Image (cartoon, rainbow, N blue to C red; front, side, top):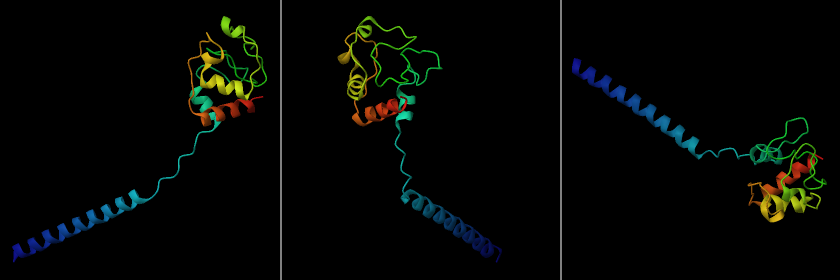
Length: 139
């Protein structure tokens, strides 16, 4: 009789454990099938912080970094930012920054100003457009 009760308890324990495992498996399957929230695409300010802010500032109060401040760059003459010493090649540049020049610059700086030292290149047109839109907001 004792063995019968022991077997019954053992069987009940396993039934409970299997039931719990089945329930947990069902929860995991349901969670796996639920769609994840869509990732928010980065905006121009975020992209600037991620890709440009290491070398450039977006204001005039921060100290100059490797590159000049990009505050009010749209409409500015290339190679003409106060407090920044440009390379000889850049100092000879004779154009004003606009959407097209900024897009070409972000695509391949050495093509726009041979001898420039900026190594950054952005192959994605949509990323360049968002960065340029952000730079225009700074004007």
